[in-house]
Amino acid sequence: METFALSGLLTAALVSTALLGTETVPQSALIETSSLQATHLVASLPTKAPLTQQQDWLQSINRQQIDLAALQQRFPTEALIEWLEQARQQGADPAQVRAVLQAADWQDQDSDLQTADLDGDGRVEWLLTINLGPDEMPWGRSGDFWVIGDSLLYRFFQPADYFREVREPIIPLDQDFFLSAPQVLAVQDFTGDSTDEVLLRRQVCGAHTCTHAYFMLGHQEGQIRPLIAAQTEPFQSGQAIVLYDPELRGLTDETGDGIADLVLHTGVIGSAGAGAQRTRTEVWAWNGAVVTLAQVQLDPTDYRFHILYEANEAFEQNDLEHARTLYQQVIEDNSLEDMQWSNEFPSSRDSTLQFAAFRLALVELRESDRNTATQWQEWLQQTYPNTPITEAARQLLALQAEMPLEAACAAVRDTLLSQESPEDDFPGSGPTGPLRYMGYANPSLGAAEVCPNIRLSELSIEQLLR
Image 1 (tube, rainbow, N blue to C red):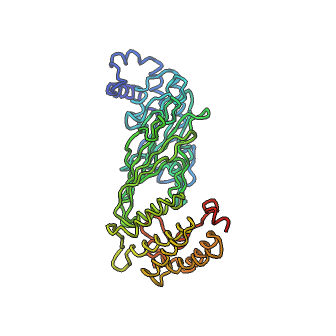
Image 2: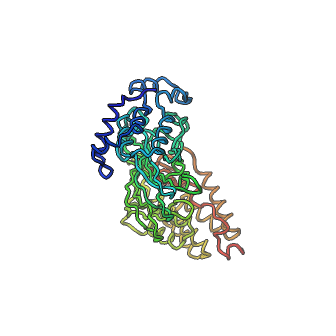
Image 3: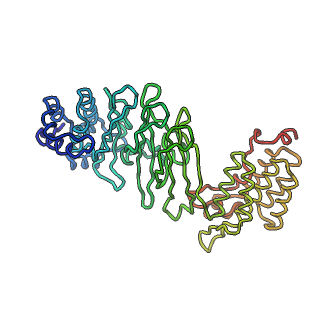
């Protein structure tokens, strides 16, 4: 293991510390307090192998099975943790430690070492972003994040994760080492317990779009642990908020509980194949156990199929009155725009109108208004005769007269699925036309979504007694 020369590191520490703002102390005073104890810490700092050796080794190894002993010879993170523990226990000045770490290329900037009392014991912990990746990408360097108290209280990655390639198509972003190292965005109370939590961000960028993953850590149940509710689809992100090109709008109380919330405005995927997307503002708030999505405010849109998506979400949440209003807007608002991939393919207009009219008939049946449901079925017959959706509406009303709505919807769904084939994916010529594929960033509305599963708990008393 290499160590930097004492004089060079100590000089770097003195020069850097003189530029640290609020933690700055006069250079003469710093020299006086640079005792044998501080000198020993600087001299014993574990250091990484030279850059060329790092790169040569990483290019030569099997990234699926990394030799941990060889890794520690070149990136001695475990020794560095012991060094940091000792430095904190001995009362080392964080500003001087930060300067030394920067000089040794363990850190890049002053914000990579911050202090906060996360466990409420009256003593601050050290919050450290540690650089490991030898090659800086446009979105930052890969690395780790540690919380150091009297011992290591939290680490984002285990050494076995460093530089490890995972070949699964999608892995949780908290397990993907090759995003940027976790960076501290904010340290404040997000849970109302009068102690601070830490908001972190990692990111990675493609040709057109950057993806950001937000994490929050806090002291709960005697340990530092992630606080954001675990996410699954569509990002397989683990305990993170994952958004495309988001903007952090604020850390303010939007839910009225007196606690700061995380307010994020989403961006879009900047690829033509992603389709036209609708942006939104999300409010993530503490619910007493985890930080979870509390509010969503959709931005205005000019696209008809975006209103259809919003109506479907209201339908799924059993807000039938709002769903009815939005489905009617899809059909009646002539100012809305439609999407067409090219002149070779149909516009999304007709498929969107048919889908909305079918759902309106379904809404009325759920409300036990068979007369209005029949009117929408007749509208489909007059406007779009001989289409799969029109026939599905006729079948739905006929079956619903003889069986529960749940069973009638299942039969209709089976009929529509029999008319759909894998070749319909792009841009879609099956029962739902282009709605089957409106870009990979938008929901796919295929045959299975026309008449979805209706849980018994959502049916009216009249329907349950049929």
